Length: 82
Image (cartoon, rainbow, N blue to C red; front, top):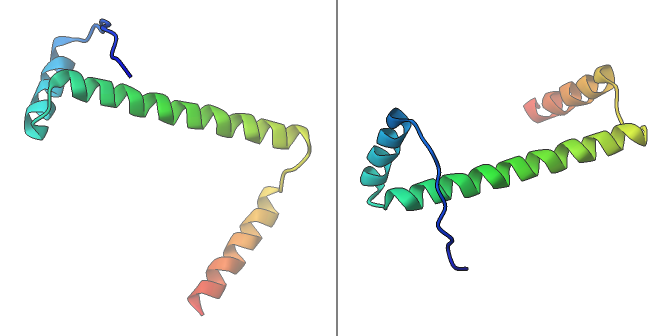
């Protein structure tokens, strides 16, 4: 996929830190920034999907109360200790 030039404004301290990381990794600064943005977007997309699934589960009353979940978890841990 071809890259499209874009501009990101960063403060001097953050830019210097990115430069240091890029140098330590022997990568161009632009590569490191692009990789960081890709990872951030992927993580945020995952989070949004998980929240939407949780809201749908709550809307459908597919939830478990805290006491029941805690009891299940403690039973599972106890079984693993044996």
